Image (cartoon, rainbow, N blue to C red; front, side):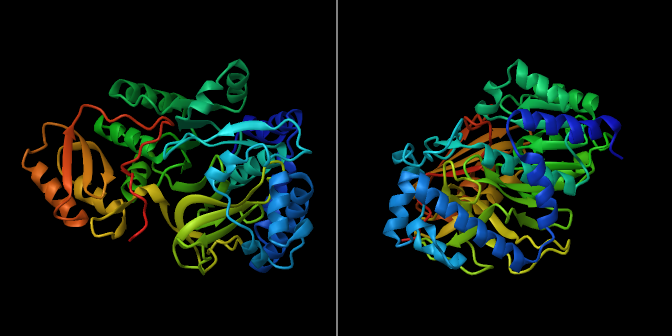
Length: 453
């Protein structure tokens, strides 16, 4: 049962906070609470209506898209079906970097500068307006309420983006305190820090936990190693995002906290694309985001087929993201969720294209094929696999006293069996594997384009 302070925070303090910042979050969330129950057909009609408004807006106010729409013979953004969106070219990170100023609306005011962490390459700089912030926050807020938690419920966030951590000034700290949100940096995950974090969990007793799956799984495993779990804290749900959620992580987290693990998918650039509901479906935020799945040649694939996720964010008139290639692999579901929401589902979420590896013969496979070789060997506490080229793959290992030296040859032979017998496997023993600059952890990194030859 939600306590009195949580109701005060959700119904008075947070709406006041958003009003002061000029955000329309409260109205948008109430609207989303209604539209989530619309039929898929009605939601598609809403998407078309909003897409028309967006394209007309950017034609008039965004120099880059005036030229793009003219070239596509869509003057003033007049379209008749969602399929007309395919007449527009894709937006890529390189195009954004080359046209940052031309992508800004001439009508935009007080834009916020944003950038990605660049864990898979060069960071991306872009801008967002108040409309987008309101819609993104509202989408996340709606999803937390699916699980019976709300703004103002005690929360612990295990995060590591320098963008957030640099902003922890007095005003931000005051705001987090008001909404009972506690940030634990994901950079330093030493045993001493993990002990401190577990003590923080026991003190805060969070109703919800939010963060990277790798960091929360590591904390869960550490709690188990210390002889205890965190299932007596009253935590209702653990939200994970920003990395691929592996099943062994879901199991470890769920067992440690004694609650469901809800996956979320999105990014700082693309917005909150999909959230998992208690029925198990990964619901696309369809009121704000159109998702297309494309093959390597850019052809749009039908539901059920895997390809690259391309998004059009309908609340980005100030700095448009239209047919933006995310670099992630997934499929749009064929069926609706048992929960009854009309929101389409995202399935087979595989992670970034850089999480795929390419065998010596050109076969493309997900990094899981390599992870399985290493993960279950006794004595391995942590690992990272880096495919430097088709000819060479490097493995970093953190081991303990249970690790047998003959396991090194098992790892080498297992990886060669998947990548090719002539591939060079270099295994490095180390005491610690650093995280990405963003604070994330990636088990597999490939520097080889995931395109079969």
